[in-house]
Image (cartoon, rainbow, N blue to C red; front, side, top):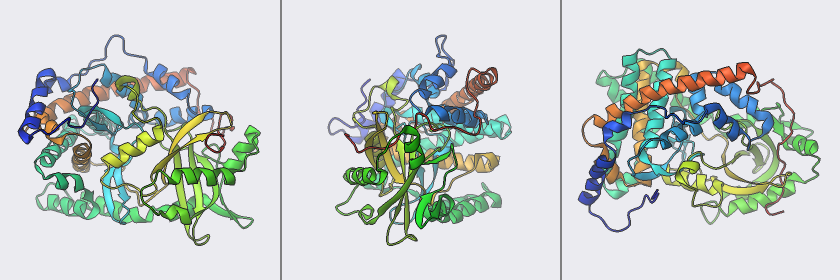
Length: 489
C-alpha cells in the first residue's frame, strides 16, 4: 500500500477535490457499510493471547477481567481485532495519519501549554498512516456498542452513530474550505464547547441536563491535575517522597528490582534516561531541567493497555510541595502495522509522539520518548507525558440518548480536525460529499460491527469460564516485570 499522505507536488483545490470524488469508483461509499466476517477470520481469543505474549505476564488476567466487564470495555481492549477485520475489507486508498484507536473514550478535555482547556483525541498508542475511514468506523462503532449497552432504542442508537459520521463529514468539509492556517489552528476549547452547547439548547436541540453535565466536566477538569494525582499516589516515608504500593496495580521500583535480583541504582539510571529523553522535547530550555527525580513505580492503566509496561515517575521542583508526575508508557508495535506495514520510525515511542504532535491541536510540553533496557536485557520503547493535566471526559455509563448524540457529533468533528492536519482534507472532503450517503454507510457498518463485538465478547467470557484464559485473582507477584538500566547498557 502507498502510505504517503502528503501531496507529491502542487495541486489545485479542484484537482484534490476531484481525486477524492474519483476514489468513490474504487470504493463506493455504500460499500463502506458492509461488514460480514470472512470464512478465514482469525479467532479473536487467539489474537488476544498472541498479543499478551509481549506483555507483563502477571497482568494479562487483569486485562481480560477488565475487558469482560461489558461489551464496551471489550471493544476498548480489542483494537487489534478490529484492525484485523478492517484489513480484510477494501478501503478508499485515501491515507491520513490515523489515531488507530479512535473510540469514544479516547476523546476528552486536557490542558494546553497555555493552560487553556481543549477537547481533542488523547490516546495515540496505535497511531500510523492508513485509510482515513478506519478511524471513522472505529469511532462510529464505539457509539453503536455504547448505545446498545445503555439500552437506547435502535432509533436512538442509530441517531447517535449518524451524528458521529455527520460530524466528521461536515467537519472535514469545513476544514477543506477554510484557509490553510485556519484549518491548522482550529481547535475546540472549553469555552467554545460551552457556547456551542448553549446554542444547541436555545435551538431546542439540547436540554438543561446536557448543559449541566458539560459544565460539571469542564469545572472539574482543572482539579484533575498533577496535584490531585500527587495527593492520591504519594506519601512522605521517613522524610522521603514515595509512591505508595498497591500491588499488583501499583508496584514501587525497589520491589521490582528486589524481586528480579537487580542491584541497579534507579536514581542514577533515571538521571541518564531523563537526559536522553530531554533531547526529544521541544524548546531550547525546558522546565524538566529544574526538577529532581524522587521515585518511580509501575502502574496498571486503561483496558487495552493493561500488561504493557507503564511507569509513574515522581519529581519535585522548588521543594516537596512542587511535584511533577510523568507517565512513561511502553509503546509496542501498532496493531495496524501487521496490516499496513511497519512504521517509518525505529522507535515506537517516537512513532506515538510524532503522530500525536501531528494530530493534536496542542500537545503536552513534556511529551517525548526514550528507549529503556530491562533486567531481562530487552530494549523497550516508551513515550513520556504528564500523568494528569486537567483531564475530563464523558462517562459512557451515564450518557442519555440526547447527550450521547451531541457528544458523538463533537467527537466526529474533532476527528475531522485531526485528519485535516495530518492528511489531505480536500481529498477526503471530495470523497465524503455533501449528502448523507457517507453517514448512512458508516452507520450501517457500525450496527453490523456492534453485533460482531457482542459475539466476540461472548467468546471472551466463555474462554474465561472454561479456563482457556486465566482469571485475575486480585493479587500477583512481580515476575516478568522490568527494572531499568541506562540505555545501551
